[in-house]
Image (tube, rainbow, N blue to C red; front, side, top):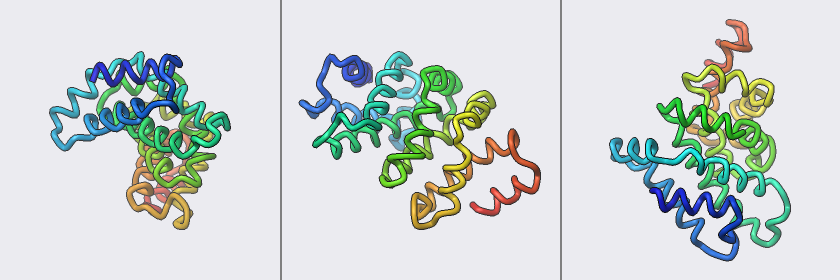
Length: 200
């Protein structure tokens, strides 16, 4: 796991060319596999041992994904972005330290920006982004509060209300509802909370 995280940091720092090698894609796939293994104990060990200083470089790659500099490599960049976001969605599960580290590294505006933009047309990326947002706000009121000025509520509601877009996946709708439940206590009245629950 340390080697995978090192690759992630080197890519973010520009030490390894993301587009000239398959190293990054393979490293992210390996990391995603480790974090989502069905062996709960192994997944927990992988999450706990993930170095938090590898988070900012991964977020920098997501920032680049929003731009146009990838040119002809946009498809590869999209695949890399999907794997990065799935990794980021695994880290905060039942792990307050990673939740806080992701917030402090600036993940919330990056994820919401992806949800409002590229994720609308990329179902795989959208599913990963919604799962990451849901994991960030579960049991973490500060993260939930920071989602509000980042304008996360509207695109999450859109997932629930639009079955022809990201909402066509039941799992993605459930993740969006889970995230909204964490936000409703901060924002909505009792009636609005019931409405959100009814949309699941």
